[in-house]
Length: 327
Image 1 (cartoon, one colour):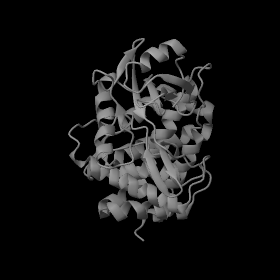
Image 2 (cartoon, rainbow, N blue to C red):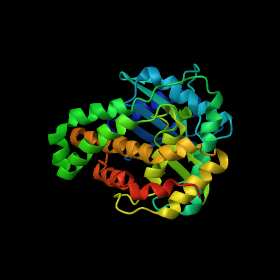
Image 3 (tube, rainbow, N blue to C red):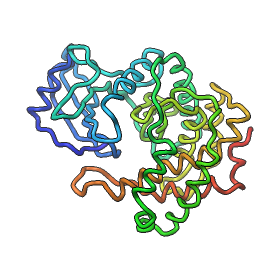
C-alpha cells in the first residue's frame, strides 16, 4: 500500500458518491507497501453513523482484467466466514470503477492491527487462518496463474542484471546467480494446489491479541501450491525484519496451526525447504527491482532486498531443513 497518484478532495468526493456509503468526511493516504495507491476513507455511512473503507487505485503489477478474480475472491471468502474484507460494489453493482484511466476499488475496513513482533500464539492463529482460507476457497470457481512465479523471478533477475544486483550488494548478486537456477530446476509441479494468498506478511494480517481479524491485500492471490503459500508465510513471519534472526518458536507455532486445519502430505513437507528458497527469491528479486525503479517522489518506503537474501541463505543451508520436520 502506497500513494503514487495524488487525488484532490473534490475528485475523491465525487468518486465516493458513486457508492452507497454516505458522504466523504475524511481521507488519508497510506504509505506502506509498494504496488498500489491507497487511502483510508471515512464517510457518514449509509445510516449516518459513520463508516471506514480502504480505497485502492491499481498502479502496476496488477492487470485490470484480473481484478474480477481478486475482488470476487474477497466476497467469496467473506461469505464463507473468513476474516476477509468485502468488496463494496458501486451503485451499478460494479466491483471497481475507472478514474483517470486507472481502476479503483472500495474495500471494507476491518478492525485490528498488524503486529511487528509476533508471538507464538499469534503465529499459531495465522497458520490456522491461512489453512482455513485455502479450504474455504476450494469451491471458488475462478483460477489465475501465479504471475510472480519462477518465470517472473527469471525476468526480474535479467532486468536487474548482475551489475544492478551487485550494486545492491556483491554477495547478493552471487547468491541469486547460484540459487535461482538451482531452485527453478528442482521446482515441484505435482503437489496439491488451489487458491492461495501468496503474500501473507504480517502487514497483510490484522490481529486483536491472538485473534486474526483480517487477512488483507489479496492482489497476488492465484492458483498455485498450497505448501508454497505456507512457505511464503514462514519466510515472512519467522525472521526479524532484516532477516538476520530466525525464531524457531514462531516457526513451530505457524506450522502447527496450519496443520491443525490442513495436514501436510509427506511430499509437501519434504518440499518446504525448496519452496521457502523460492519464496525468498520471489521477494528478494521484486524488492531488488523496486529498489532500482521506485520513483524518487513516491510516498513509499523501499524495502531491503538483502533481508530476503539472508533468509534465502538460511533455507539453502541443509542443516536448517529440520525446521520443517514433523513435530
